[in-house]
Length: 318
Ligand SMILES: NC(=O)c1ccc[n+]([C@@H]2O[C@H](COP(=O)([O-])OP(=O)(O)OC[C@H]3O[C@@H](n4cnc5c(N)ncnc54)[C@H](OP(=O)(O)O)[C@@H]3O)[C@@H](O)[C@H]2O)c1
Image 1: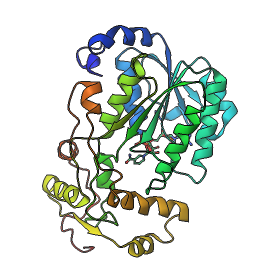
Image 2: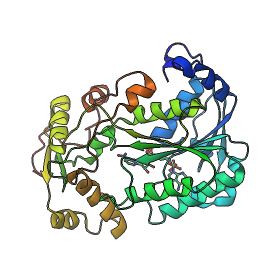
Image 3: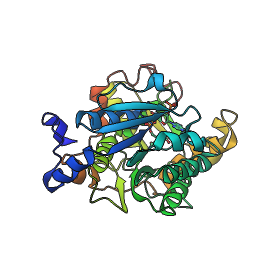
Image 4: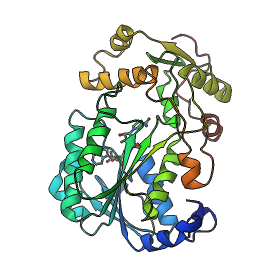
């Protein structure tokens, strides 16, 4: 939120300032605060003077922040009763999607129902780029189903549809310096998690102007995985390449590493790129935060150890 960078006053941008000040008096429930995006959002909201309740599975891992209290729901979204109790008094809920699971849609429906029963007025849900019921990347269908569950309530809502995280890419590089998957030369509009978090912070802090809106969130570049590998190589000095697998190779190389539904999720995250379903650029980050989104190169320059797991003479897996 630009306001906090100007010294912490919760003034917001332009005409939204008064709405943001009013929102500061409302309790904002933040899920996922022990993770990357939720943790970033909670920190930014605290800097801006918001009152927050961090709804977490393990309160010992919740960040300690001014104006924030932690509420434990060890069973997570699946525990509807505990979620309902934890959300009583919350005005606006930031809902981070659960870890990938075979029953993730049911978990999300449980959390949405809990919010409605608890009297939450507004949900801001972190969804996925171009969420649809027949997305090639099968896990994106979970997000569409969750959006539908939220639309079916009387709650005010905003959907923030993240593209693939740019800062997730280094973790996709094998120890031998390879990103392998059936993505072909498809492009994606990857975005940094902190930019997703900053957009979320703006939407959460301003109580007006975002109802019923769906924001597709991208970074500034349409990248292929081969181009991403080149950027990673250039910025880290480690040789990284993209290897375009066939579908059969992709399933074979991942066989037995996880349950079938999860392997399908991994493989289709690449075929979704090949199908062009993550392709596109939006001005959401600039429009909502007032600054340009960061690039993969920006992030790598700040995280020199991001490829510590990759051998420097990385060529053996190629
Ligand atoms: N766009 C992408 O490229 C991409 C890549 C990977 C994942 N994602 C999705 O984006 C979400 C947020 O990203 P992130 O980087 O912030 O993830 P993260 O760092 O893994 O954090 C996830 C957060 O969600 C909480 N959580 C997980 N399952 C839950 C459940 N069943 N009930 C309640 N809370 C639960 C976790 O709590 P604990 O600390 O207790 O585990 C953690 O606080 C992820 O959860 C995942 O669904 C997107």
